[in-house]
Image 1 (cartoon, rainbow, N blue to C red):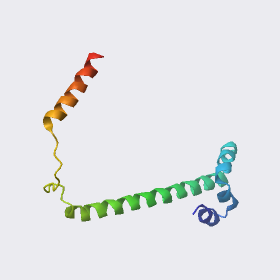
Image 2: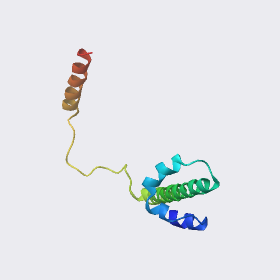
Image 3: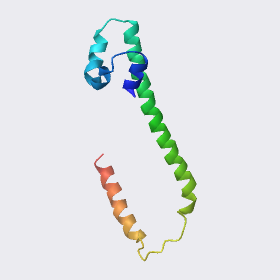
Length: 103
């Protein structure tokens, strides 16, 4: 996409091949309309990347909202495993009091 934007502005497309090295060189050059056009090309590229990420996120959100109604989290658990609440309270209760003693 950067090459496309650079070609639209009649700028050298080799910049897109060496993007990481050209950024530091671009900062060293004095202000000019050519540099502004190159900055605009970089901004265009970042906007495309961010718009793509946003579109993917919105699509995934839509899929989640559409299909979440089929996965009911309030259904009855069909497992024989049960927590022994006294044992859990004893274990976690002891840990919380041990941590407070050190403070």
